[in-house]
Image 1: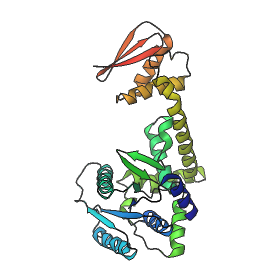
Image 2 (image 1 turned 30 degrees about the vertical axis):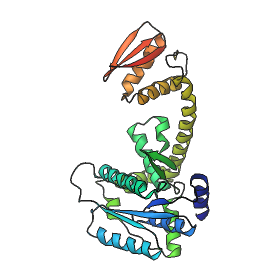
Image 3 (image 1 turned 30 degrees about the horizontal axis):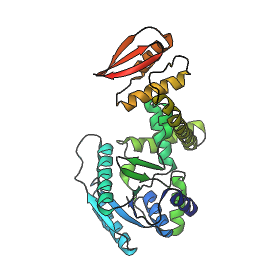
Image 4 (image 1 turned 135 degrees about the vertical axis):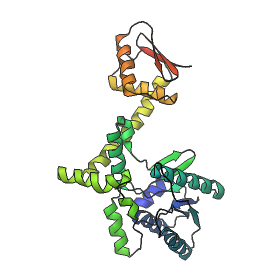
Length: 302
């Protein structure tokens, strides 16, 4: 596992820079904490107390003591107890905002997150069930920038089971967060109910297959990014003779770049008119007008 970390750091990180580690105290982030510490990597630690559990403040104190033991800078942010709404989304927004502030104030290069292969499988399955397009099934990226904040995930190819075995072998302590099993949260249901049930029904671990799907989708997304550039440079070209998949990707890309929501039914309607190569046809999509003429289309914002 140490070899994976070293390889990731060599490919994605500048050795002389300092990063931030998001440390929840669970097995995943504790494993990443000790792995980064063991390869002589410069990092500071951020912990967010969500105030979801009575014991969370004590856990924050324990993590602070752990960082003190290894002479690592520790940053704590305590949130007010949540009230209604989508708690997971709210918490994620608060975390990223805190990490972004710290990175700016402390001149840190980015944040290390402990997402692993099982998290990747959950993400891909969630996107499949939500009806995401093929390139969007790529799941979590090893390195990604979100609103100016660089996120690094070096454990995406490592199974949770491997992390637990690694921790047990070395006697490292971690916390078990009961909210991870709370069926009120979709992640909890995916992790402890839906994925185990699917694996049981299929007679094999479906997580591996989902991760492969995510990897293939990521490769497809990279290919499309290069391919679509040609169409962006000559917008308004005839798409009627293109393969349906590519033509629809060009349409999706145009709407995305214009920040316009594109329902599947509207996509299919546009493609139908493009194939007809008929005279001028206009469609109203939200606050915009789509003009379709002889196999080409143009988006006009009103």
